Length: 127
Image (tube, rainbow, N blue to C red; front, side, top):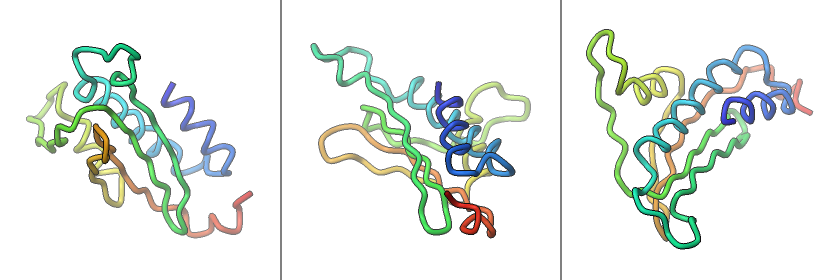
C-alpha cells in the first residue's frame, strides 16, 4: 500500500519520472521499519497504538517523506555486513535521500523522515 500510495501521489504531482523509484524505495523502507520495529506489542483498547502512517509533502526544493509509528525507540543506523538480509533499510534511506532523521512526537511515538531533492526543472512542471 505504501508503494502504491507513493507512486500515485508522485504521478499527481508530475514527479513520476526520475525520482519515483527512489522515493518509492525510501517510503517502503521507512514503512517496513515502522511495522517491524515501531509498533507496540500490545494494543490499546481502541487500537490507536498500532497505527503506522505515511505522509508525503512538497517543499520548495525537496520532497519530504514522513512515517509515524507509536514507538519512542530511536532508529539506529547499523551498517549491515556484506550480503546481509536485515538492517539494510536505513542505509538505503541514507543513500537515496538528501538527509534523514527522526523526531519524537509530543504525545507518543516518533516520526522518521527523509528529504529527497526535487528535479531542478520541476517547478515549471508542477500542477
